[in-house]
Length: 264
Image (cartoon, rainbow, N blue to C red; front, side, top):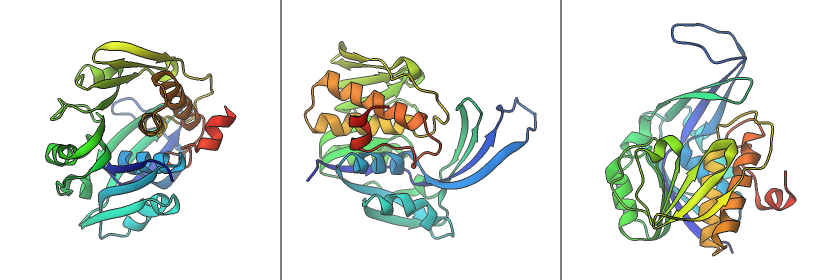
């Protein structure tokens, strides 16, 4: 059996419009294609961890609407154990994706914003799509608490592992371990403020960055729980993010262990 991990976070449906380029303020552009897919940072990270061999439980909320089953489809397919609350409306992400893989995303929290705080034991991974009270409660009894500080805001807790990109790092810096991602340039891992590992990202042709950060975060968490050395854990996480960015779709692009071992 793999390591056990509980993910507390968002479950969405992604509404994705593929464009040649992103619109400027006030501009209308034509989309080449449109699709509806299961998504949400919490769900993406839960699926990514499960594909890497972890035994994953997902704590989250969906609506009682027609979108709920679509939102849960990827979690069910990955064998993630579900602990769900039901509210009125399933969360939505409205995503513009251009020909270079760049995105603009607006999130409608829906049920995610109404998730009840609860204490969780063992290893726990959260994002800041949840309310502060949910994050604080999830961290209270965790033996290892990882936080992906997205969307960024000042932290209500000090996690064992904080994962942020360069912009989020300007807002959230507190953690025993802090991983700072820099897109195609890779990532740096700090322990108590001292750099302990640095990894480049494998060279790829990026087509969709939607799930790349979630693949990175889940892989780093699972690798650390497996007690891999810092340098190996960070390199694996960068490879996972690159795999995701090189393929279309958030959840479909998340790699498994065999893909990481096989290289890009």
